[in-house]
Length: 88
View: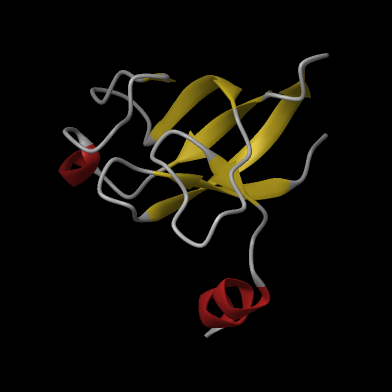
């Protein structure tokens, strides 16, 4: 727990998510960080958010998807390519 993963939005883009819990079923809970109200219509169903406040949301029971094109509402590890791009 405590690491970061990439959460897949409805349009296939990703946002950083801090892992806050891991269930016995292997699904995770986390805190999702997004970049503003433009994400309002881009959240999958498993995101609980109040956009009137902070640009963060609580996400529960998120499955891992390591496929080349992960499904919305899932997560995957941060790739080396993504990590390097975020450093720039």
